Amino acid sequence: MAVAAAAALAAPLLLSAPDAAARPHTPAEDAAKLSRKLVREASAGDAYRHLKMFQAIADSADGNRAAGSLGHDASAAYVYSQLQKAGYQVSYETFGFTYIETLAEKLSVTAPTPRDIAVVAMSYTTSTPKDGIRAALAAVPVDATTGCEPADYAAGDVTGKIALIQRGGCDFAMKQKEAAAAGAVAAIVYNNTEGALNGTLGGPGIGVIPTGGITQSEGQALAAEAGKGPVTVSLEVRQLQEPRTTRNVIAETRGGDADRTVMLGAHLDSVTDGPGINDNGSGSAGLLDVALDLAETREKPANKVRFAWWSAEELGLLGAEAYVTGLTAEQRADIALYLNFDMIGSPNFGQFVYDGDNSDGVGAGPGPEGSAQLEKGINDFLDSGNFPHEGTDFDGRSDYGPFIDAGIPSGGTFTGAEGVKTAAQAAKFGGEAGVAYDTCYHSACDNLSNINTKALDINVDVIAHAVGTYAHDLSSLSKPAGAPARATKGQSGRPLHARGHQPAA
Image (cartoon, rainbow, N blue to C red; front, side, top):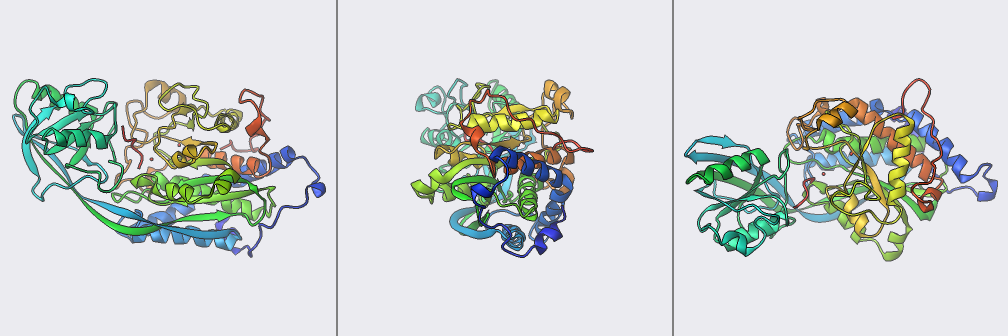
Protein backbone atom coordinates (compact mmCIF):
# COMPACT_ATOMS: atom_id res chain seq x y z
CA MET A 1 0.00 0.00 0.00
CA ALA A 2 1.26 3.48 -0.76
CA VAL A 3 0.31 6.07 1.82
CA ALA A 4 0.52 8.74 -0.85
CA ALA A 5 -2.06 6.91 -2.92
CA ALA A 6 -4.41 6.67 0.03
CA ALA A 7 -3.92 10.34 0.82
CA ALA A 8 -4.78 11.29 -2.77
CA LEU A 9 -8.20 9.65 -2.63
CA ALA A 10 -10.99 12.18 -2.93
CA ALA A 11 -13.41 12.30 0.01
CA PRO A 12 -15.79 10.74 0.57
CA LEU A 13 -14.84 7.24 -0.60
CA LEU A 14 -16.51 5.35 2.24
CA LEU A 15 -20.16 5.74 1.41
CA SER A 16 -23.21 4.12 2.92
CA ALA A 17 -23.49 0.37 2.64
CA PRO A 18 -25.47 -0.97 -0.32
CA ASP A 19 -28.86 -2.54 0.12
CA ALA A 20 -28.47 -6.07 1.44
CA ALA A 21 -30.59 -7.42 -1.42
CA ALA A 22 -28.00 -6.21 -3.92
CA ARG A 23 -25.14 -7.94 -2.14
CA PRO A 24 -24.04 -10.94 -4.23
CA HIS A 25 -22.48 -12.84 -1.34
CA THR A 26 -23.19 -13.73 2.25
CA PRO A 27 -21.70 -11.54 5.00
CA ALA A 28 -19.20 -14.30 5.79
CA GLU A 29 -18.06 -14.43 2.17
CA ASP A 30 -17.76 -10.65 1.97
CA ALA A 31 -15.80 -10.68 5.22
CA ALA A 32 -13.41 -13.35 3.98
CA LYS A 33 -12.81 -11.46 0.75
CA LEU A 34 -12.14 -8.14 2.45
CA SER A 35 -9.94 -9.78 5.07
CA ARG A 36 -7.74 -11.38 2.40
CA LYS A 37 -7.48 -8.09 0.55
CA LEU A 38 -6.49 -6.10 3.61
CA VAL A 39 -4.00 -8.71 4.81
CA ARG A 40 -2.42 -8.64 1.37
CA GLU A 41 -2.09 -4.85 1.37
CA ALA A 42 -1.13 -4.21 5.01
CA SER A 43 2.53 -4.49 5.89
CA ALA A 44 5.19 -3.58 8.41
CA GLY A 45 6.92 -1.57 5.67
CA ASP A 46 3.94 0.74 5.25
CA ALA A 47 3.46 1.06 8.99
CA TYR A 48 7.16 1.84 9.36
CA ARG A 49 6.76 4.89 7.15
CA HIS A 50 4.34 6.29 9.70
CA LEU A 51 6.81 5.43 12.45
CA LYS A 52 9.43 7.49 10.65
CA MET A 53 7.05 10.44 10.77
CA PHE A 54 6.45 9.94 14.50
CA GLN A 55 10.20 9.82 15.06
CA ALA A 56 10.74 12.99 13.06
CA ILE A 57 8.02 14.72 15.06
CA ALA A 58 9.60 13.66 18.35
CA ASP A 59 13.03 14.79 17.16
CA SER A 60 11.63 18.26 16.53
CA ALA A 61 9.71 18.44 19.81
CA ASP A 62 12.00 17.81 22.79
CA GLY A 63 12.37 14.12 21.97
CA ASN A 64 8.88 12.94 22.90
CA ARG A 65 5.22 12.85 21.89
CA ALA A 66 3.67 13.04 25.35
CA ALA A 67 0.06 14.12 25.83
CA GLY A 68 -0.17 17.88 26.15
CA SER A 69 3.09 18.44 24.27
CA LEU A 70 3.86 19.80 20.81
CA GLY A 71 5.01 16.31 19.84
CA HIS A 72 1.64 14.77 20.54
CA ASP A 73 -0.25 17.65 18.93
CA ALA A 74 1.80 17.19 15.74
CA SER A 75 1.31 13.40 15.81
CA ALA A 76 -2.45 13.84 16.14
CA ALA A 77 -2.50 16.37 13.32
CA TYR A 78 -0.58 13.97 11.07
CA VAL A 79 -2.98 11.09 11.76
CA TYR A 80 -5.98 13.38 11.32
CA SER A 81 -4.79 14.70 7.96
CA GLN A 82 -4.04 11.23 6.58
CA LEU A 83 -7.50 9.97 7.50
CA GLN A 84 -9.31 13.06 6.29
CA LYS A 85 -7.64 12.85 2.86
CA ALA A 86 -8.60 9.19 2.68
CA GLY A 87 -12.29 10.06 3.05
CA TYR A 88 -13.05 9.24 6.66
CA GLN A 89 -15.31 11.27 8.89
CA VAL A 90 -12.66 12.51 11.33
CA SER A 91 -12.94 14.45 14.56
CA TYR A 92 -10.89 15.56 17.52
CA GLU A 93 -12.11 14.91 21.04
CA THR A 94 -10.53 17.42 23.42
CA PHE A 95 -10.33 16.87 27.17
CA GLY A 96 -8.45 18.32 30.12
CA PHE A 97 -5.89 16.49 32.23
CA THR A 98 -2.95 17.04 34.51
CA TYR A 99 0.27 17.05 32.50
CA ILE A 100 3.22 15.30 34.16
CA GLU A 101 6.88 15.72 33.40
CA THR A 102 9.46 14.03 35.60
CA LEU A 103 12.27 16.40 36.51
CA ALA A 104 14.44 14.16 38.71
CA GLU A 105 14.73 10.46 39.62
CA LYS A 106 17.68 9.64 41.89
CA LEU A 107 18.15 7.04 44.60
CA SER A 108 21.45 6.43 46.39
CA VAL A 109 22.46 4.31 49.34
CA THR A 110 24.71 6.51 51.46
CA ALA A 111 25.48 3.96 54.20
CA PRO A 112 26.65 1.35 54.94
CA THR A 113 27.45 0.42 51.30
CA PRO A 114 27.23 3.48 49.06
CA ARG A 115 25.78 2.89 45.60
CA ASP A 116 23.26 4.29 43.13
CA ILE A 117 19.98 2.49 42.36
CA ALA A 118 17.72 3.17 39.39
CA VAL A 119 14.35 4.52 40.53
CA VAL A 120 11.24 5.56 38.59
CA ALA A 121 9.00 8.27 39.99
CA MET A 122 5.38 7.20 40.36
CA SER A 123 3.01 9.25 38.21
CA TYR A 124 1.29 11.92 40.32
CA THR A 125 3.80 11.60 43.15
CA THR A 126 4.52 14.56 45.35
CA SER A 127 8.01 15.94 44.90
CA THR A 128 11.02 15.97 47.18
CA PRO A 129 13.08 19.15 47.61
CA LYS A 130 15.65 19.74 44.87
CA ASP A 131 18.40 18.23 46.95
CA GLY A 132 16.26 15.21 47.82
CA ILE A 133 15.46 13.55 51.14
CA ARG A 134 18.13 11.77 53.15
CA ALA A 135 16.77 9.39 55.77
CA ALA A 136 17.01 5.94 57.27
CA LEU A 137 15.31 3.10 55.42
CA ALA A 138 12.47 1.16 57.09
CA ALA A 139 11.71 -2.19 55.43
CA VAL A 140 8.02 -3.08 55.80
CA PRO A 141 7.50 -6.80 56.63
CA VAL A 142 6.45 -8.84 53.62
CA ASP A 143 3.08 -10.59 53.49
CA ALA A 144 0.21 -10.92 51.01
CA THR A 145 -0.76 -7.27 51.52
CA THR A 146 2.54 -5.61 52.29
CA GLY A 147 2.13 -1.99 53.33
CA CYS A 148 -1.61 -1.90 52.74
CA GLU A 149 -2.80 -1.69 56.36
CA PRO A 150 -1.81 0.33 59.45
CA ALA A 151 -0.82 -2.88 61.25
CA ASP A 152 1.92 -3.47 58.65
CA TYR A 153 3.84 -0.53 60.07
CA ALA A 154 3.31 -1.31 63.75
CA ALA A 155 6.22 -3.72 64.03
CA GLY A 156 8.82 -1.02 63.28
CA ASP A 157 9.24 2.69 63.70
CA VAL A 158 8.92 4.39 60.30
CA THR A 159 8.53 7.94 61.60
CA GLY A 160 10.91 10.22 59.71
CA LYS A 161 12.12 7.30 57.58
CA ILE A 162 11.73 6.17 53.98
CA ALA A 163 9.45 3.12 53.81
CA LEU A 164 10.56 0.20 51.62
CA ILE A 165 7.46 -1.70 50.51
CA GLN A 166 6.98 -4.74 48.31
CA ARG A 167 4.45 -4.44 45.51
CA GLY A 168 1.18 -6.37 45.74
CA GLY A 169 -2.03 -6.65 47.72
CA CYS A 170 -3.29 -3.11 47.07
CA ASP A 171 -2.57 -0.23 44.74
CA PHE A 172 0.44 2.04 45.03
CA ALA A 173 -1.70 4.94 46.22
CA MET A 174 -2.81 2.98 49.27
CA LYS A 175 0.74 1.92 50.11
CA GLN A 176 2.12 5.44 50.13
CA LYS A 177 -0.95 6.73 51.99
CA GLU A 178 -0.56 4.18 54.80
CA ALA A 179 3.18 4.77 54.95
CA ALA A 180 2.59 8.51 55.31
CA ALA A 181 0.01 7.93 58.03
CA ALA A 182 2.61 5.90 59.93
CA GLY A 183 5.06 8.82 59.74
CA ALA A 184 7.18 7.94 56.69
CA VAL A 185 8.64 10.87 54.76
CA ALA A 186 8.80 8.95 51.44
CA ALA A 187 8.08 5.51 49.99
CA ILE A 188 10.03 3.18 47.73
CA VAL A 189 8.01 0.31 46.25
CA TYR A 190 9.91 -2.65 44.84
CA ASN A 191 8.56 -5.04 42.26
CA ASN A 192 7.30 -8.52 43.08
CA THR A 193 8.36 -9.87 39.70
CA GLU A 194 11.30 -9.35 37.36
CA GLY A 195 11.63 -6.09 35.50
CA ALA A 196 11.44 -2.37 36.20
CA LEU A 197 8.49 -0.91 38.07
CA ASN A 198 6.75 1.96 36.28
CA GLY A 199 3.77 2.89 38.44
CA THR A 200 1.05 5.46 38.92
CA LEU A 201 -0.75 6.70 42.00
CA GLY A 202 -3.83 7.02 39.85
CA GLY A 203 -4.46 10.74 39.53
CA PRO A 204 -3.66 14.27 40.65
CA GLY A 205 -4.00 15.04 44.34
CA ILE A 206 -3.56 11.43 45.45
CA GLY A 207 0.15 11.65 46.23
CA VAL A 208 0.89 12.23 49.90
CA ILE A 209 4.63 11.55 50.10
CA PRO A 210 7.32 11.24 47.40
CA THR A 211 7.07 7.73 45.92
CA GLY A 212 9.23 5.82 43.45
CA GLY A 213 9.58 2.28 42.15
CA ILE A 214 12.61 -0.03 41.88
CA THR A 215 13.26 -3.58 40.71
CA GLN A 216 12.59 -6.70 42.71
CA SER A 217 16.27 -7.58 43.02
CA GLU A 218 17.25 -4.13 44.27
CA GLY A 219 14.36 -4.06 46.72
CA GLN A 220 15.14 -7.47 48.13
CA ALA A 221 18.80 -6.54 48.50
CA LEU A 222 17.88 -3.35 50.38
CA ALA A 223 15.46 -5.24 52.64
CA ALA A 224 18.11 -7.84 53.46
CA GLU A 225 20.64 -5.10 54.19
CA ALA A 226 18.18 -3.25 56.43
CA GLY A 227 17.56 -6.49 58.31
CA LYS A 228 21.21 -6.54 59.37
CA GLY A 229 21.48 -2.95 60.52
CA PRO A 230 20.75 0.71 59.71
CA VAL A 231 20.64 1.72 56.04
CA THR A 232 20.56 5.36 54.98
CA VAL A 233 19.40 6.46 51.54
CA SER A 234 18.98 9.67 49.59
CA LEU A 235 15.86 9.95 47.38
CA GLU A 236 15.04 12.67 44.89
CA VAL A 237 11.88 12.39 42.80
CA ARG A 238 10.41 15.58 41.37
CA GLN A 239 7.58 16.11 38.88
CA LEU A 240 6.09 19.06 37.09
CA GLN A 241 2.30 18.76 37.25
CA GLU A 242 0.04 21.32 35.56
CA PRO A 243 -3.40 21.44 33.88
CA ARG A 244 -3.36 21.09 30.09
CA THR A 245 -5.62 19.88 27.30
CA THR A 246 -5.07 17.16 24.73
CA ARG A 247 -7.17 15.31 22.19
CA ASN A 248 -8.09 11.93 20.83
CA VAL A 249 -8.41 11.39 17.08
CA ILE A 250 -11.58 9.51 16.06
CA ALA A 251 -12.25 8.40 12.48
CA GLU A 252 -15.10 6.33 11.11
CA THR A 253 -16.47 5.13 7.80
CA ARG A 254 -19.18 7.37 6.39
CA GLY A 255 -21.42 4.37 5.85
CA GLY A 256 -22.15 1.10 7.56
CA ASP A 257 -24.71 0.26 10.20
CA ALA A 258 -24.05 2.53 13.18
CA ASP A 259 -26.00 0.12 15.39
CA ARG A 260 -23.24 -2.41 14.71
CA THR A 261 -20.10 -0.33 15.14
CA VAL A 262 -16.74 -2.11 15.05
CA MET A 263 -14.11 -0.18 16.99
CA LEU A 264 -10.33 -0.49 17.12
CA GLY A 265 -7.88 1.72 18.99
CA ALA A 266 -4.29 2.45 19.93
CA HIS A 267 -2.79 5.16 22.09
CA LEU A 268 -0.79 7.80 20.28
CA ASP A 269 0.98 9.46 23.21
CA SER A 270 4.44 8.59 24.52
CA VAL A 271 5.98 9.15 27.91
CA THR A 272 8.07 12.30 28.32
CA ASP A 273 11.30 10.27 28.46
CA GLY A 274 11.36 9.26 24.80
CA PRO A 275 9.70 9.24 21.36
CA GLY A 276 7.58 6.15 22.08
CA ILE A 277 8.09 4.43 18.75
CA ASN A 278 7.18 0.99 20.03
CA ASP A 279 5.06 2.34 22.90
CA ASN A 280 2.84 3.08 21.16
CA GLY A 281 3.86 4.37 17.79
CA SER A 282 3.74 0.74 16.66
CA GLY A 283 0.05 0.22 17.41
CA SER A 284 -0.83 3.68 16.12
CA ALA A 285 1.06 3.16 12.85
CA GLY A 286 -0.38 -0.31 12.32
CA LEU A 287 -3.91 0.97 12.85
CA LEU A 288 -3.33 3.91 10.51
CA ASP A 289 -1.92 1.67 7.79
CA VAL A 290 -4.96 -0.63 7.87
CA ALA A 291 -7.40 2.29 7.99
CA LEU A 292 -5.82 3.78 4.87
CA ASP A 293 -5.84 0.38 3.19
CA LEU A 294 -9.55 0.02 3.92
CA ALA A 295 -10.21 3.41 2.33
CA GLU A 296 -8.15 2.47 -0.71
CA THR A 297 -10.27 -0.63 -1.35
CA ARG A 298 -13.33 1.62 -1.86
CA GLU A 299 -15.18 -1.07 0.06
CA LYS A 300 -18.59 -0.25 1.54
CA PRO A 301 -18.63 -2.05 4.90
CA ALA A 302 -21.94 -3.40 6.15
CA ASN A 303 -21.02 -2.29 9.67
CA LYS A 304 -19.63 1.08 10.66
CA VAL A 305 -15.89 0.86 11.36
CA ARG A 306 -14.45 3.33 13.85
CA PHE A 307 -10.77 3.88 14.61
CA ALA A 308 -9.39 5.75 17.62
CA TRP A 309 -5.97 7.14 18.49
CA TRP A 310 -6.08 7.82 22.22
CA SER A 311 -4.19 10.47 24.15
CA ALA A 312 -2.95 10.43 27.77
CA GLU A 313 -2.95 6.64 28.01
CA GLU A 314 0.37 6.89 29.77
CA LEU A 315 -1.26 8.91 32.56
CA GLY A 316 -3.99 6.38 33.31
CA LEU A 317 -6.00 5.60 30.13
CA LEU A 318 -7.42 9.13 30.29
CA GLY A 319 -8.31 9.49 26.60
CA ALA A 320 -10.20 6.22 26.37
CA GLU A 321 -11.86 6.92 29.70
CA ALA A 322 -13.01 10.36 28.54
CA TYR A 323 -14.40 8.85 25.35
CA VAL A 324 -16.32 6.00 26.96
CA THR A 325 -17.60 8.17 29.80
CA GLY A 326 -18.91 10.66 27.25
CA LEU A 327 -21.01 8.07 25.41
CA THR A 328 -24.72 7.75 26.05
CA ALA A 329 -26.12 4.34 26.97
CA GLU A 330 -27.39 3.99 23.41
CA GLN A 331 -24.02 4.89 21.92
CA ARG A 332 -22.26 2.35 24.14
CA ALA A 333 -24.75 -0.30 23.07
CA ASP A 334 -23.98 0.47 19.41
CA ILE A 335 -20.33 -0.61 19.84
CA ALA A 336 -20.26 -4.31 19.00
CA LEU A 337 -16.62 -4.80 19.95
CA TYR A 338 -13.38 -3.04 20.79
CA LEU A 339 -9.91 -4.27 19.82
CA ASN A 340 -6.79 -2.68 21.32
CA PHE A 341 -3.26 -2.70 19.90
CA ASP A 342 -0.50 -1.48 22.19
CA MET A 343 3.22 -2.20 21.70
CA ILE A 344 3.06 -4.54 18.70
CA GLY A 345 6.71 -4.32 17.65
CA SER A 346 8.70 -5.18 20.78
CA PRO A 347 12.30 -6.08 19.88
CA ASN A 348 12.45 -9.26 22.01
CA PHE A 349 8.79 -9.93 21.41
CA GLY A 350 6.30 -12.47 22.60
CA GLN A 351 3.04 -12.80 20.70
CA PHE A 352 0.30 -12.21 23.26
CA VAL A 353 -3.47 -12.24 22.76
CA TYR A 354 -5.76 -10.84 25.44
CA ASP A 355 -7.37 -13.67 27.39
CA GLY A 356 -11.03 -12.98 26.77
CA ASP A 357 -12.32 -16.19 28.32
CA ASN A 358 -9.90 -16.28 31.28
CA SER A 359 -8.76 -19.73 30.19
CA ASP A 360 -5.32 -18.95 31.58
CA GLY A 361 -6.79 -18.29 35.03
CA VAL A 362 -4.34 -15.44 35.68
CA GLY A 363 -5.22 -12.12 37.28
CA ALA A 364 -8.46 -10.49 36.15
CA GLY A 365 -11.47 -12.53 35.10
CA PRO A 366 -12.87 -12.86 31.58
CA GLY A 367 -13.88 -9.91 29.46
CA PRO A 368 -17.51 -9.09 28.70
CA GLU A 369 -19.53 -11.62 26.71
CA GLY A 370 -18.06 -11.81 23.22
CA SER A 371 -14.47 -11.30 24.39
CA ALA A 372 -13.79 -15.04 24.26
CA GLN A 373 -14.85 -15.05 20.61
CA LEU A 374 -12.57 -12.11 19.83
CA GLU A 375 -9.66 -13.98 21.38
CA LYS A 376 -10.51 -17.08 19.39
CA GLY A 377 -10.73 -15.09 16.15
CA ILE A 378 -7.20 -13.74 16.63
CA ASN A 379 -5.84 -17.11 17.77
CA ASP A 380 -7.34 -18.87 14.75
CA PHE A 381 -5.82 -16.31 12.43
CA LEU A 382 -2.39 -16.69 14.03
CA ASP A 383 -2.70 -20.47 13.91
CA SER A 384 -3.51 -20.31 10.20
CA GLY A 385 -0.11 -18.69 9.66
CA ASN A 386 1.67 -21.03 12.09
CA PHE A 387 2.49 -18.17 14.44
CA PRO A 388 2.80 -19.27 18.08
CA HIS A 389 1.00 -17.19 20.68
CA GLU A 390 0.06 -17.03 24.35
CA GLY A 391 -2.70 -15.43 26.34
CA THR A 392 -2.18 -12.25 28.34
CA ASP A 393 -4.33 -10.97 31.17
CA PHE A 394 -6.70 -8.02 31.03
CA ASP A 395 -4.59 -6.39 33.73
CA GLY A 396 -5.79 -2.83 33.16
CA ARG A 397 -2.59 -1.61 31.54
CA SER A 398 -4.08 -0.27 28.33
CA ASP A 399 -7.10 1.34 26.72
CA TYR A 400 -9.36 -1.72 26.67
CA GLY A 401 -10.00 -1.01 30.37
CA PRO A 402 -12.83 1.55 30.04
CA PHE A 403 -14.50 -0.56 27.33
CA ILE A 404 -14.47 -3.65 29.54
CA ASP A 405 -15.90 -1.59 32.39
CA ALA A 406 -18.71 -0.52 30.05
CA GLY A 407 -19.51 -4.16 29.17
CA ILE A 408 -18.19 -3.97 25.59
CA PRO A 409 -16.55 -7.16 24.22
CA SER A 410 -12.82 -6.49 24.03
CA GLY A 411 -9.58 -8.02 22.84
CA GLY A 412 -6.40 -7.32 20.93
CA THR A 413 -2.69 -8.08 20.91
CA PHE A 414 0.47 -7.04 22.72
CA THR A 415 4.12 -8.07 22.28
CA GLY A 416 5.48 -7.35 25.75
CA ALA A 417 6.89 -4.45 27.75
CA GLU A 418 9.27 -4.57 30.73
CA GLY A 419 8.44 -8.20 31.58
CA VAL A 420 11.24 -10.72 31.13
CA LYS A 421 11.09 -13.44 28.48
CA THR A 422 11.28 -16.97 29.84
CA ALA A 423 13.34 -19.80 28.37
CA ALA A 424 10.13 -21.49 27.20
CA GLN A 425 9.03 -18.31 25.45
CA ALA A 426 12.42 -17.91 23.79
CA ALA A 427 12.06 -21.44 22.45
CA LYS A 428 8.57 -20.61 21.20
CA PHE A 429 9.01 -17.09 19.81
CA GLY A 430 12.76 -16.77 19.36
CA GLY A 431 14.72 -13.97 20.97
CA GLU A 432 16.66 -13.99 24.20
CA ALA A 433 15.57 -15.54 27.49
CA GLY A 434 16.17 -13.60 30.67
CA VAL A 435 15.84 -10.25 28.86
CA ALA A 436 12.87 -7.88 28.80
CA TYR A 437 10.57 -7.98 25.78
CA ASP A 438 11.40 -4.28 25.37
CA THR A 439 14.52 -3.12 27.18
CA CYS A 440 13.79 0.44 26.02
CA TYR A 441 10.32 0.53 27.55
CA HIS A 442 9.52 4.10 28.68
CA SER A 443 13.05 5.20 27.78
CA ALA A 444 14.80 7.53 25.37
CA CYS A 445 15.98 4.54 23.32
CA ASP A 446 12.40 3.66 22.29
CA ASN A 447 13.15 4.94 18.82
CA LEU A 448 13.09 3.56 15.27
CA SER A 449 15.83 1.05 16.11
CA ASN A 450 13.57 -0.42 18.80
CA ILE A 451 11.12 -2.10 16.40
CA ASN A 452 11.05 -5.78 15.51
CA THR A 453 9.59 -5.73 12.00
CA LYS A 454 8.57 -9.39 12.16
CA ALA A 455 6.41 -8.72 15.20
CA LEU A 456 5.05 -5.55 13.59
CA ASP A 457 4.21 -7.42 10.40
CA ILE A 458 2.36 -10.18 12.24
CA ASN A 459 0.27 -7.76 14.25
CA VAL A 460 -0.51 -5.37 11.42
CA ASP A 461 -2.01 -8.38 9.66
CA VAL A 462 -3.98 -9.24 12.80
CA ILE A 463 -5.47 -5.75 12.60
CA ALA A 464 -6.16 -6.13 8.88
CA HIS A 465 -7.87 -9.48 9.33
CA ALA A 466 -10.03 -8.16 12.16
CA VAL A 467 -11.10 -5.06 10.23
CA GLY A 468 -11.91 -7.10 7.13
CA THR A 469 -13.84 -9.71 9.07
CA TYR A 470 -15.90 -7.56 11.41
CA ALA A 471 -16.60 -4.84 8.85
CA HIS A 472 -19.03 -7.29 7.27
CA ASP A 473 -19.71 -10.13 9.69
CA LEU A 474 -20.29 -10.12 13.45
CA SER A 475 -21.86 -13.57 13.60
CA SER A 476 -18.84 -15.14 15.29
CA LEU A 477 -19.48 -13.04 18.41
CA SER A 478 -22.64 -15.02 19.13
CA LYS A 479 -21.11 -18.44 18.51
CA PRO A 480 -19.61 -20.61 21.26
CA ALA A 481 -15.90 -19.80 21.51
CA GLY A 482 -15.09 -23.46 20.87
CA ALA A 483 -16.88 -23.52 17.54
CA PRO A 484 -14.75 -24.26 14.45
CA ALA A 485 -13.50 -21.12 12.76
CA ARG A 486 -13.55 -20.35 9.08
CA ALA A 487 -10.04 -20.99 7.77
CA THR A 488 -7.97 -18.01 6.69
CA LYS A 489 -5.39 -18.56 4.00
CA GLY A 490 -2.01 -16.89 4.06
CA GLN A 491 -1.11 -14.62 1.18
CA SER A 492 0.96 -16.45 -1.40
CA GLY A 493 4.62 -15.52 -1.24
CA ARG A 494 4.65 -14.10 2.29
CA PRO A 495 3.31 -15.11 5.72
CA LEU A 496 0.27 -13.75 7.48
CA HIS A 497 0.96 -11.31 9.43
CA ALA A 498 0.50 -6.66 22.36
CA ARG A 499 0.65 0.19 28.73
CA GLY A 500 0.86 4.00 31.30
CA HIS A 501 1.28 0.54 31.43
CA GLN A 502 2.24 -0.60 34.88
CA PRO A 503 -0.81 -1.82 36.77
CA ALA A 504 -1.40 -0.08 40.04
CA ALA A 505 -1.03 -3.08 42.31
